[in-house]
Image 1 (cartoon, rainbow, N blue to C red):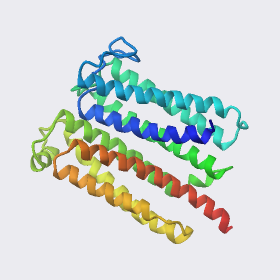
Image 2: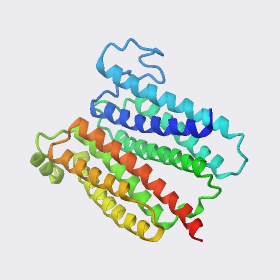
Image 3: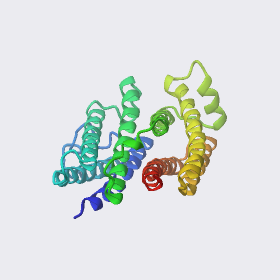
Amino acid sequence: MKLIIYTKLGIVLSVLSILAGAFVRATGSGDGCGSTWPTCKGKIIPQLSDTSEVIEFSHRSISGILLIVTLLIFIKSRKISKGSIARRTVNFLTFFVVFEAAIGAVIVLYEWVGLNSSLPRIIAVPIHLVNTFGLLASYAILYKILLNNFKNINQLWDRRFIFVAFLFLLSGATGSITALADVLFPSSSFYEGLMEDFARTSELLTRLRILHPVVASGLSAVLIIESRKIKKDYKIDVKFLQLLVIIAVTLGIMNVLFNIVLFLSIFHLAIADLLWITYIYVSMDKIKNKSAIN
């Protein structure tokens, strides 16, 4: 099987792993397999006797397949010339997926799951999310490298891309904190939640919820401005990117107003993943178009 096909599969599995992880957290199913890892309640294939066990095992299965696919890509990439941009990207990819497995294991083994509200969990959750975004970015970049036969992507790492990427990661990290707070300390209404966000007596995690809409709003504004500049300077179609920004903002507002609906939350995260991938693709198209112009 060609490397690019494995890469496509890896992108799909990465997104599914992120969404499954969010579903596990939102439903409080993180302890569905107990405190054993990589087995589920001490078994490779558990009985799946309750819902939380099914949810957690499904997430672990997706992540396990992703790990296998990534290792296959790593093995196949050894045939690529040493020092090539594709091979270096695979090395980053492998690091992210191994770290993903490691931090997932730590979270389970130390029981930072379910209704656990300890500081280590509050720290681990955003780190986990940022790593998955790094994993997804590595897969997206590798796919474009293989598809368009890029020999060098140094121009990708300009100040504008680094700044937007930082906002994406910060938005993801704060979003994971907000999601965790909504699970551990749910509010009965939009108004009650808003009051709790600014109340000195509220839990720290609850008061941190306000960070995500602020960062996400800033990211959305920057993406709209950046997309217009890209369209003007590089003649690249950015309509899909702009549409995703609008959808993401709309879903975010609906989530807040309707006091966090599980389906909307997962859909919102899926759009955020797609937006991240699309921004990377548009940014790499800049390199291709710039080379053509020159």
